[in-house]
Image (cartoon, chains in turn brown, blue):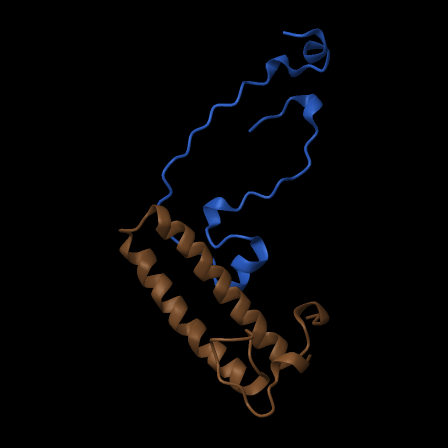
Length: 85
Length: 59
C-alpha cells in the first residue's frame, strides 16, 4: 500500500476510534455539551477524510456509503488482512 | 480462611469492592495517540505492568 494511502487510512482509523470512545462517554453523559461538540467535529472531519480516501482509493465499505468508480472496485481491492502499514 | 490461601500469603489482600467514580470530561488525547494507547481519555490509560506480588506492593 502506498505510504500516503496508509497514512490517510491510519488517520481515518484514529478518528473512528475517537468517535467511538466519545460515543461510549456520551452514553453515560448525554448532557455533556463539550463532549458532544467534540463528537460532532470529529464526525465531520471523519466524513471529509473518508470522502477523500474513497475518491482516490476506492470504497471503504462494500455497500451503502460511497459511489464506486468504474469498474466496481470492491472485489479487487486489497482485503484488510492483506494490508500492512 | 482455607489453608492454601494462607499459604499463598493471600490473606492480606482485601476482598473486591466495586466503586465507579463519575468520569468528568476534561482533556482528551489527539486521535493518533488515542488509537495507540487504546483510549482517548488520559485518566483511563492504565497499562498493566507486571509487578512482583511477594513484596505485597499495592498502589
